[in-house]
Image (cartoon, rainbow, N blue to C red; front, side, top):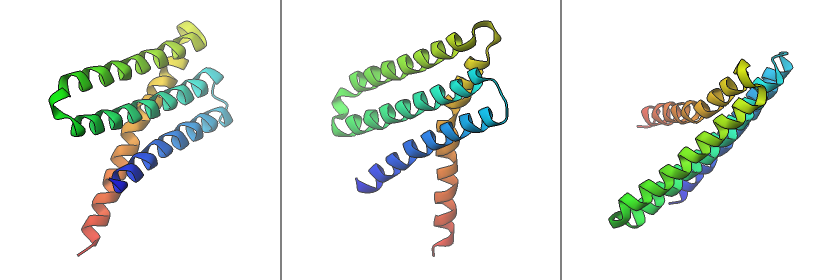
Length: 129
């Protein structure tokens, strides 16, 4: 269980580092505040959704007979986080849509981090005899 916890913590940490780094880079490059703030909000939402998926898997493995309730509950929480982040992105600049674009970019950071970690682990496994 310890390797899974370490992997989970690394994933969430990398999502936040990447989100805030991208937001700071966007702001330093002179892009609008709404885009940078949207990336940060999306990254936070992505980290929260990653944590909920981890909790969902842990609860599912502990009690498989409650699978429907566990999946439904945590999926609802995840969708509420997505909706809240997208709404916040919309309120950042309204009809321009840059805040919303930033949130979408931030929400996709979860997938970028997971794919990068999978590539790293597969390369490490290929090197070991």
